[in-house]
Length: 210
Image 1 (cartoon, helix red, strand yellow):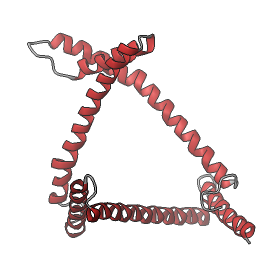
Image 2 (tube, rainbow, N blue to C red):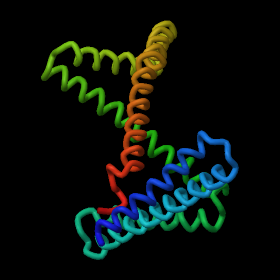
Image 3 (cartoon, rainbow, N blue to C red):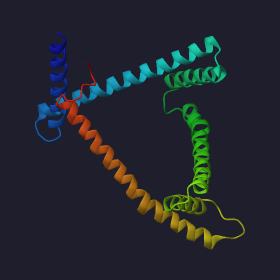
């Protein structure tokens, strides 16, 4: 019985995967409509999974508030803000000025603060790494970080020439080396996703059950 259920779910997954994959290569109207229908189902299931994740988050933090565990005021603040944002979004809509102001004056400053802290933390970690392990890679890391910081930060006392020079170096590092590395990472992620999809499609991996 267990083997029969495994074969059934594997066959269903393979059938859906073949239809969606073939819809990108075969110009057949029925196949295209089936592909769009299956993708809408996948989006609906993803939204349902997101909703279940939010409910699980609320339940975990409510449990923490009820027991008054360590850090429970932060959990209470998270619940209040989450429910308040959800109610405002449902009542006024996502394009309302009130809802957009929450993101503009709360979400974006918090993200900018976290990015600034990340930059300082990386610089401090780089200095600590150079102090402990003085090799070529450590020196390249800390030199690159300093060049990016000097090219991004404003220069006082009329340092326009230095600012332009370091700004050019920062752009060169970002557009040549960093962009090339990012493309390599994206290609690796794409190849990994394709490999995982093919393993699921061929029945080698079964994330939908035992």
